[in-house]
Image 1 (spheres, rainbow, N blue to C red):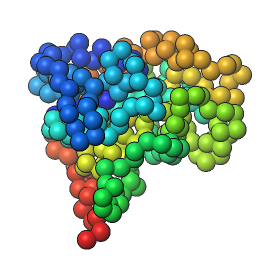
Image 2 (image 1 turned 90 degrees about the horizontal axis):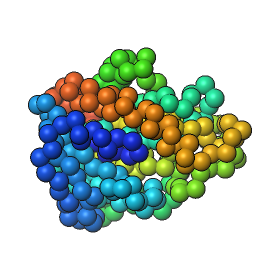
Image 3 (image 1 turned 45 degrees about the vertical axis):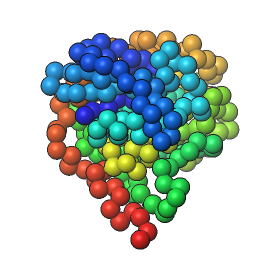
Image 4 (image 1 turned 180 degrees about the horizontal axis):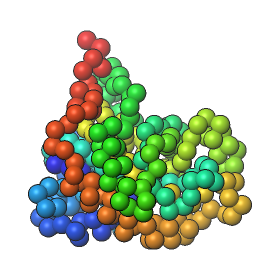
Length: 259
């Protein structure tokens, strides 16, 4: 089964398929948001709204463990996530779609692992599934001239936006975009040997990159303009994904645990 963790702007993907049921799963980490299970042609898909239905949860209050674990309980082995992000560079403009290949984690209070009772050290040399990334990028060539291949996702705690000094630091460290929801999601998926890739929608310039004040209204305006392209990209990617997982994600725990 394919899983989608949807942030801002992609709730409409469910309407493209045949909705079968909604489930709220009780995981060892708490309840999941309502998960919509639907068929998209011959593919079974589970859609989980990251912020709950109605976009009620701020980024720092999301139960990332319950979300990822719930998808695993349903039999999901791949997760396609969407994230609204700010650009750290003037050349990367609002409205563009970026497929990250690395991250910097600046979250502070979020439970970031499933393994607190034993030593498990998963490899994140390729934190985002290379096979899933390749499929997204290939399909992106038909959407608005393509997507941006690669970049470093910087994740902050939120809910406030970042300061100019923080943005300067992130740029110096090699960051490309900044957001509040990508971590620890990507790591939790790897710990459960699930493939994970993200489509980052650039919704604004980060603080000090543009002279304009960053507002949440600006974010939602860009999302509204681009949600059709984003939904189309997700749709096409799901239908073209190969059934065989030819990537390191499915063996992530091999050699990771201290005996």
